[in-house]
Length: 398
Ligand code: NAD
Ligand code: GLY
Image (tube, rainbow, N blue to C red; front, side, top):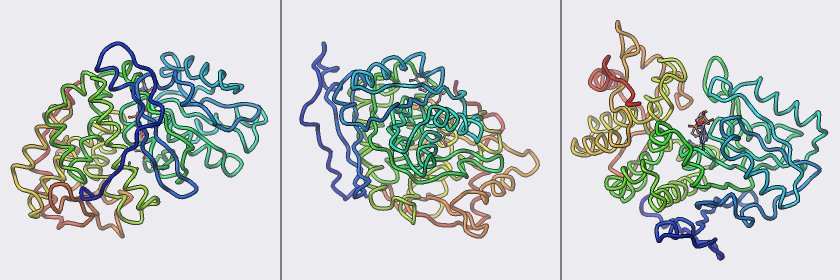
């Protein structure tokens, strides 16, 4: 991946110049393209993007456009989005979903369908997902299903959603027996990443989003990891130019991977670096105890440790990645999920991972720094890594 030239284009008409040189850098709108033939679309990235009419121009209009969001996000950014759509001639209805991963389910999905059906929405009705990954995944799935498919736009307002979940067309709800188990691949028309929306996001959520930025380094781009080593503090402080670079570079890498393997026949699985261990932590602790990005943070350290023991990276690399994860405000050790047989519990949970084949756990491991591959590993080695990397004393830093 790191050898591929990932072209980034700047939009022909960068939007407004504001007060300081820092803001000027960030205010230029960057466009990253997802190339999927007739399903291709742009990701627009910039500060104050949602106030920019060109960001909203040319979207399909039917009798009503539905903004799907939640009360938390709507309180900060709902009015701006509504006004921007109205200024383009859309008649806007807003659907508020309950806020939280525990509501990423059939009931919330049905709230969207209830609103669409009772308003007589047709198959040209545009849905706008305004929020983090939970709102984005559910709106995308609703768009995929309603009348067998209506257009939708992603307006991600968390760092995690801007660098990962809004891009690439994975949509889903959770099932009591598993996370994201019911879903569809369905691409949006456009992704609008307004970096300014992150100003209202709690610091803990910024750290969680950084986990998904960091992951792109070890799997695809060591230059990004080098850059992150010196810029984590800037990112946590929401420095506009640093954010613009991190979001754009993450989207470029994701665009490249999705463009090559939209439906995860193989390559796309590398985007799950650290997630096999991380998903076990989330499920074992109970969803919501640790944020997804926190589990991925500790999970990446464990995946790097396993890679090291298999000869893919050296110890210095593991230590470096651990330092960067810690600097991001993320845990670097996994929790103990079962005092009697912790490794056994991890293995049991990891066998449920979507990448598992016939009970054989498939990990995303590093063949070398900057190059990932999906492979299994001997249980005894995995047990040793879990024993080495987990602690009953670990707490999330927030
Ligand atoms: P989230 O959507 O729950 O958002 C986190 C919290 O921040 C919520 O309370 C939300 O209301 C609030 N929030 C959002 N934007 C805000 C803002 N600008 N200001 C203040 N508060 C704001 O969580 P998330 O981390 O964005 O997404 C996690 C979800 O994404 C999970 O369900 C995960 O499965 C999914 N995901 C999907 C993909 C994919 O490819 N589709 C990839 C990664 C994760
Ligand atoms: N977040 C992993 C993927 O989109 O494939």
